[in-house]
Length: 121
Image (cartoon, rainbow, N blue to C red; front, side, top):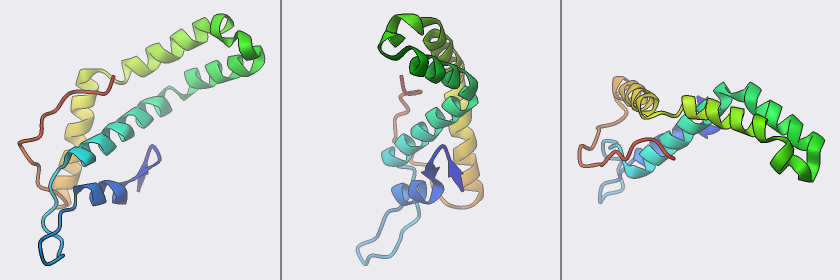
């Protein structure tokens, strides 16, 4: 299954740890897994704002080099939309849901020593 262009198998690989014998140990939630999850979160937010992104892209194609001043409103609308879907609360919910999904499937053990810096800015 894919979310926002990031393969879940890639996320699982980021979580995998190996023992000295090379056998796979229980998966732990790593910083790399958290970073992949953040990328999935941002891709999901951009997908949810596809209509605003398209308006900006269309304007930029139409206006060329004048995009900076002629497409300000479209850029502002696009950024506002993405910001609405990338709040701290949205990130916390998204992260908790994805971790719960992995835990439900028995795929990971969450490492409590990882600091959670919040959503990417």
